[in-house]
Length: 299
Image (cartoon, rainbow, N blue to C red; front, side, top):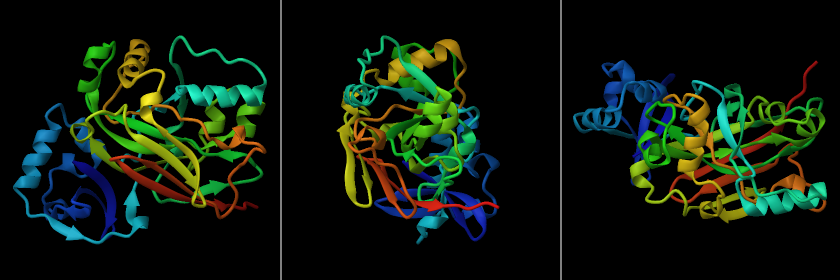
């Protein structure tokens, strides 16, 4: 099941994809239960939410619609807490970072976790704001993101997949100059619009193995990143176990699982996003998000 949030007739509605066509449930316009009016509501409804949604869909007449990309919203507008992210989770990304910093970076013994503000979430085809007075070194990072469906704490690896609802594409836009100046991740990762996600959430039953998916990023149609999720150092169950050992995971939480090599700051010479650039992040069997970088001016 591929679930979207769309704006249709001035309403934000749940939609689904079947055979590459997008459908709405006409009942969502009038008599839809409150818990199917958004993905957040749907995820918070309970453990049986998938079955309830399928029952509702099967008892409704679907209506195919043609939806413009600018009407496709982020699948999740606001997470219960900050987006959780994996740092240095691909060996080749560690190697390229070593060349930049001119020092050995040890393969992490434990997952490196940082967060992005939930207010950084952007639509899958929304513009990425560029404010040069804030940062002149915006960088791309194509990542597989997972969405928590069943809340929990102290989750063991063998139970981890029971807590996942599905997967989506995430671009972890990063302001490298802010990271460098402040010696931490959060501020440089949390600019408005710095977290495009989507284009939909693909339910976990449609992804046989999340650790064997092609992942890529293009800028202006030039391939910058091209890898596979099988090269992650810490697999998804290990990530969930590590995070939930210390803190609670809620339904609707997002975990970004790390980026492979090919980011802009590690190139020779370094490359950063500029006004008019088109960034495409794509993951096999999930989809593609495409965002234009647009410079903003403030008085």
